[in-house]
Length: 460
Image 1: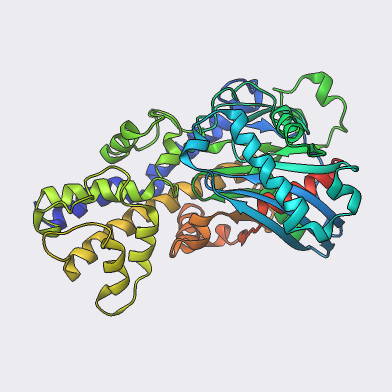
Image 2: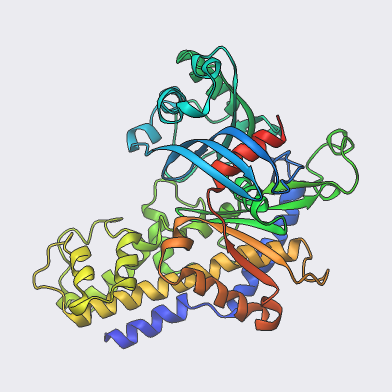
């Protein structure tokens, strides 16, 4: 089969039209409403954060935050300087596969060790002698980019984590307790005063910069979104909880939109199904597996394997190493799409990770790059679905708002070539440019660190 014929087939499956996106948007809208009334037990969506305050941008002070995402642990001392300005002094660590799949207590001890290093070394100058010595308790805001059944702003039960984390003896335990036990083992006087998902952190952090922000979106290793919901609509919360707040109160919701979607309405291709079958958590996070940074490279590899088998790529020879699942990371896609060097030198360097029978031709690199573009274009369209569904859930366009601000953070959005433009284009195609222009996509930075510090400050 020729490359052109193969591309026609792949593009038909991956380049989604508005009509193909509509069942996904409708499905997400339904899942929002179901999630708001379904108790957050086990695998849950639409999780109440118990955060009912948003920053105004004029708050000041220094606060401690911890941010655990799919790739990195970041512990920070955050200076809020007012006027939406911040300074972050952080320590970053990357957990090994052994830590991510091992005993939970060992993982939390590893976090406690890093926290001790920040307080006593990296950012010691920001703390008083009593805080460094442990005589005075330090408050910590924890951004946890995994599902938690939150029962208060500083309490929450750890749910199934995802993103490669399969910690033992953690699920079902209170997150704050796990931290406090580890801090006690390491003789640290640190107290968790706020727990928030990193997407809630992104929303709060960007609201410090722009109080008009209505959606926080993280598009990185995974995808997730947060937004403020009217408290009377969060019927999963007991009336005894809802009655404590004024009627017009809004509470921030961690949607866990990464686990939205089902085979009933997601346009899963044979490549999506093959990727899912090779994953250590099959049938979980199907939507996220279609678009996020953890998975795009593998989708490209699977498509490329069909081109190779058809003799349309690499002269029909599978390069040594390329046939191994998960051997083509998304960063290689990024290199291919951004490469403007003569003779595609940067692309060749990326592909040097594999052993070829004959060196890739310019045509080979062009074909592989086109596959990358197709996969990335679908990722952008599917990421836009998260924005569209939350704009509709809040009825923001019905209220004739022309200042709908979406704060977006995450490596896939920020660093993957043209991804920001592609998400913008997907919104334009859905709404039409006149209506779409009411939605502003803004880069949200330091969502976990600054958001955690802000919530610690707002809820102390």
